[in-house]
Image 1: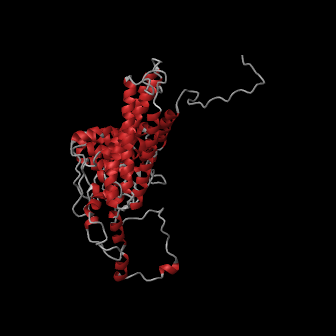
Image 2 (image 1 turned 90 degrees about the vertical axis):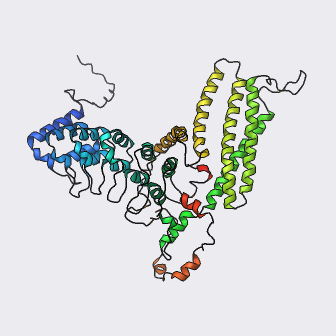
Length: 495
């Protein structure tokens, strides 16, 4: 019996099942069966994007559809698009569908040797697209070991492609595999470290690029001998400008860094100075001796005083060091920044410990609250120490134990980087040419028609405008080794 009321009835939720209690995925399988019974040739046709039904199913991760098609037809598994670009297994690897890649390899083991139009295997495609799960799965299979160091038509290994596209998680996974070779060069003679320095934006590297570079440095990836920064540039071309900018330090960036560190250290000095004169619990007024801290005999208070004192004087040393760094000399700035960064990390750590001890001391009358304060403070303090650990360590870790120490902090940084992915950002380095493509967002304006009609300066005029070799820094090897301004200096405080 139905009951009718005048009140409006709530809108029913969307039905995930039809009247026969079937999910949409089941209906999709039924559509495939109907299409196969009606016209089997539909599965061998291309759409407007020149993809077969199997390629589309592999691209969107439709595992049941892939299984249905490969059971009925084996030939489309090996078909490329009319342009000879990629096969269905390449689409699955590029989109990161591990289950579909596993399904293809289990049914057709010879697919591991199939290449796309650029001579790239499935590991190339997964590494270039930043699909860490697919890369990890391929590295776990012993029968796919030959793919690890295989090169494409441009001589690029999977590590080359992941480096150029700035996928730090994939680069980290590959660098931890002992079978991966770092000394392999592409057709232009570039190792993975050379490819990193050539492809990254030298003026303002992104966070993903910095992490990618740092992963290679921690793995001690070498640079090649024939690298662009050591070759004699051709005067009168953009090549000289690119090479000179690659090893020219950015003085303004160092000054901004110095100012930020000095401001942070000054704030810590102010807070710790005030905390030292207004200690928790106050001072005694009616007992002898007067003016002594009431809680001075407690261990928590003593720990508070020690950590607060360390925070004050370490931050004071940071300020004094950075005052010398304001002289304007680049090498003086770099030297004092190397001293200031660890001291600033010590100051931040001790001021956190001081706060933790002070708060737990003033709420010691409650049995549970100090435990909660210590637990929460320890969690955030550990997180802060992990972020401070990487900048305080050298870039090249010669000892394997240090790599294991920084592994989890580095994973935390990768997790932070993945929260705001860089999206479809094209690399600055064109793999088909040696030219460095300028950033589209540069402040340089295109010349007008009048300016374009002007004659380009000859070699003599260009030599007058360009800096002489005598004006370049004496320590050229340090800049050539770093390539990217601000990456290999100051113990990588920005990495």
